[in-house]
Image 1 (cartoon, rainbow, N blue to C red):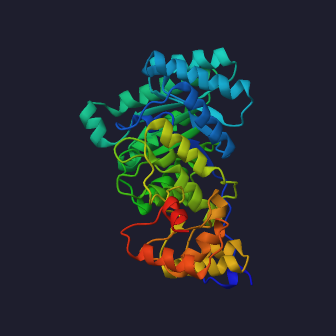
Image 2: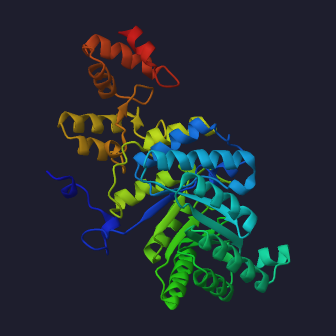
Image 3: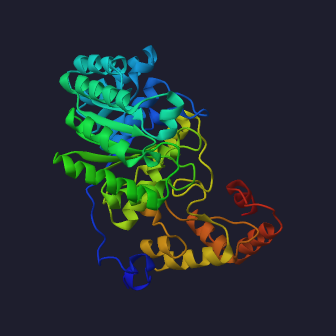
Length: 404
């Protein structure tokens, strides 16, 4: 029987028969914005290169490889990552962050000249009234900085994405003036930012729809990016709302690393978009990507973290394990992946795991022994089962082998 016949999916109610396919790209900010977290390590260049290749294997379209205006190490690492991309003919496209100031853009020009290829420049400026008031910025000053920076980068052969920080708290008139100035000055992409994690899905949808109308007013072919943060725990759903409103490239970081509570977790976003049918990609290497970032940046993955956490597909509960084992007995991987999980483990390089503990039943013991090539005799099963019931936690593999 087909799995679709065994699950009534309320997520599809009111939706088209097949989910819409969106032309979505992803920009990985792990190696730049992600490293602004006060609790992460800035990895050595060798580990950054490994992470870059894992992004490539996941099919991520672009990556922020640094803010070279930050100093000598940032310049050196950005140059090395750009060389790695172009010398190895990787498909992933590099971009660099810069303030709307020539001093930040000049190092990007120099790096692009050294590697012999253009590097997208993501030039940013604060746009909300609270930022303007704090910084004593006038709109005229912001418009002048925008025009000068975007034209300077474009005139030097760099594709430009213009970024308004704190877009979701900015006045519509300010956004219209800033974005039109940037587009008229040569920006080919504009970025809507939820810099402090203020947005709700409704807010994300509203601001992206508004920005899309500005682009349409110009008549230019300009892409719209969404850059979100997770302060209210809404980064993933906000990104989905932004996509549905017209954003064509979404920013995120592995494991949500970033300032405060972090950026949009790119791994969780990819999983959800895949399951919603909005993208169709091979995500079997997602766990390796997250594990590598975890080790390189010194960020432990919580055991209950979705999809890549230790316990994501692991159970020792008797009723749950029994259902999973019965599904395995039917030789149906998809059934086993779905009976007690909303995420098919095999799509993301994982598998269901049955453990033995105080809440286990005999199904757990029998399956575990068979899985490890040990005959599940009645005596063995009873001995292990009785021992597990007396324990406060799961039995380790060493304990189970000893009991055998």
